[in-house]
Amino acid sequence: MTKTEEFSNRWGIVLASLGMAIGAGNLWRFPRLAGQYGGAFLILWIGFLLIWSIPILMAEFSIGKKFKKGVIGSFGSVSGKGLTWGGFFITVCTLGIAFYYAVVTGWALQYLGLASQNLFSFITGSKTIAVHLAEDPTYLETYWDGISNGSISTVILYILAVIAGIYLLIKGIQNGLEKANKVLIPSLFGLLIVITVISLNMENGFKGLEYMFAIDTKHFSNPTIWIEALSQSAWSTGAGWGLIMTISSYSRKKEDVVLNTFISGFGNNTASIMAGVAILPAVFALATSEGEAVSFLQSGNQALTFTIIPKLFSTITGGAILSFIFFLAFFMAAFSSLLPMLELFIANLKDMGFTRKSAAMRTAVFCIIFGFPSAWSLNFFNNQDWVWGIGLIISGLLIIIVVLKYGISKFKKDFIDTDSDLNVPLKYFSITLCFNVVLAVVLIYWWMSRGYSENPWFDANGNWNVFDVYSNASVVTQWAVALIAGIAINKYLYNKFVKS
Image (cartoon, rainbow, N blue to C red; front, side, top):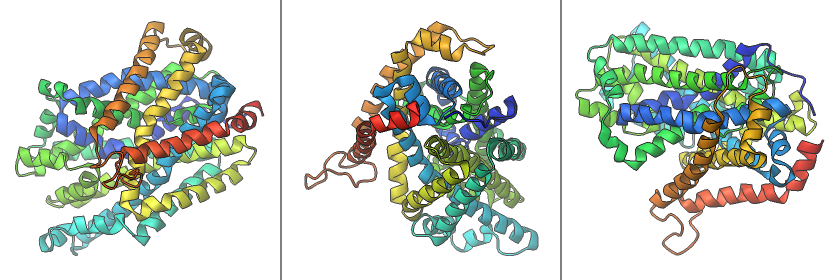
């Protein structure tokens, strides 16, 4: 089934690619890591962009552009009948993320509402967050606990986020996704610039920049920073998600694969650095000491975004304005990344013969149903984030395997070099892909061997510890279910998504 929809011009697909890549992780995960490890992290992070993310994104973009199908159909078309199940796993992995990512978008709406209320209170002289914190220092922690577990308001808001995304996508690629990104992405960059200017003009704000770009060589001997840098690059750029494969399936025939990939990858990194430059100076300027600032940055993803940032902004005059701008940018980033996740599901359903509207409605139902457990339970949310976040490495490895099976030189000639004005050396493409096979295996083994759970495989009674949030047993079981299901229906997938 050939798609008739496509982006109107290069900027349409560039903005869609940036919208896919620039998400909540840029604003709440990157600043923490940049603050924790400084310039050493930045060097490794940029290195992994070139080593891991760019080669995989080029492969994804060219496959989607070539076959004009959803992930299962495009992947199966290049892999052949025997490996079509790989496209199924990639789809399941990304949908697993989409289901709980819709909840992140709901949280973003929740805190945008809190920031709006705080801004109104600041203007009218009513009770602001600063006053609440003076009366109860645990005010923000209590608020976070209230919305992250068993919260009806969170359920309602994540459902609204899904419905809003589906409403836009029903309109199609040009009238829906493209028009939305023309507003979301420029606005997001504009808001980041505003936050940056305000932060850099705060007293001692420059210390945040000094810390962010200072290179401490001792960090390079710490294996954790290598894992963090790779995972941040893979997560943030969208490498291995199948999202860029979906977006490029709507590209024009002459679209430049290499140019668009580099614009997407470096555009994402630019947004991350802007977020770091915006947040770190504020953290250092408002903390009582450098040690306290670093402690804030190392306190965890959710804590930094949902408790520390509002607390920091509440301590300064005009902080209510800064907090509102930050959470508006945070929501825009989260929502712009949710859209292509929803589109990935829609594209696969369209390949099954559904109309765009029918596919979109079914996508909404699936996301609302399967997103509910993450909206209701933070433990379930964390488990899904753990399982499918690591699963992206498997997805990236599957894409690499397909290229190796096809033949690296032949793939580059048939898929990437066609219509590409920019050219990357074959040696670069070959070395990085082969290296990434080893890297993926080592990374997964290392991750599993660390034992993030007290009982990684079996509980105290000797039972398979599948229900532990961070256990290896939970990760492997859910991966196995997706892999076995894909292999079991591989023939159906090939006939339905490829041959038809």
